[in-house]
Amino acid sequence: MYDQYGFYSDNIPPNGTGPGASQSGGPNFGGFDFSQYMRDQQAHGGQGVGSDTGGPSGGSFRDIFSQFFSRSGGRDAAPEPERGSDLEYGLNVAFWQAIKGTQVKLNIHRQETCETCHGTGSAGNNVAVCPECDGTGTVTQMAGAMKFNLTCHRCGGSGRLKNSCPTCFGQGVVSRTDSVEVRIPAGVSAGARLRVAGKGNAGVGGGPAGDLYITIRVDEHPFFKRAGDNIEVQVPLSVSEAGLGAKIEVPTIDGKALLKIPQGTQNGQKFRLREKGIFNSRKNTRGDEIVEVVLQAPNIHDERTRELLRELAQVQTEDVRSGIWAKVQPQA
Image (tube, rainbow, N blue to C red; front, side):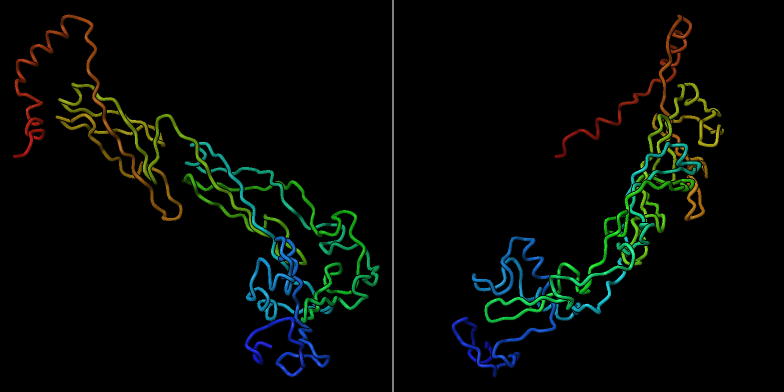
């Protein structure tokens, strides 16, 4: 009609000569499946194709024509296998479990294939003719001057009705709690995502099961701080050790390690212990431990200590704050 007149109107009687016209005088869209589009329109409160409002409500003709090439209705069309959905699970892991690795058992709520019907959703082989479509698998609807052959919503286009499985009520899957063993690799970091194949929800119509994805959350440690594959620690240092130099023991994730402190070490200075960090199994490398020293002022409990500090002040007469004034002076 559009090709002939340049516009469409219900007031123009179809003469059967235009493209797509049927022998009876009206456009015939036989063989095209608008069922999914019509269901989408009804689900969103629309009035369907060719309503009294003058066109599709809540959709576009792109939705209509996508039906032409995406599927073909009919009772001979078998439902395609559908993959099960994936599952997401959050897991809290202790600091030492993340460092050393561990294996945990999780109880996951998932959908499994019904053992009674083996996922078919039907009980036995008894079938009956669908009373909605009289066994044809399609129903006919008229919308204005347009005729639609829709897949029967009751039988899904098969033309037959099967008895629903009493266990899964025709769904083919049942909800159950499954125990899953998960290996946490050594050195796993917070935010890491582990995949367990085939432990998601069961597929439909013989489709494969989805996967289980586990997001790791690692607990904080009161002393060791993690930065990627490195470990960062703060170690107290006395004034005499910083001034004279020393060899001190520092904690690592493997135990104690010896650290050499050079003479004149300043507060906040950092030292690196090679390969004392976290092992990365993907890179097959190990991080370092970064040791930051924090100077501790001596506790004065006796007169002898005061006397020694007075002597030190007399020997060390330079102004340790002299350099800051040049930095704070306003520029001309």
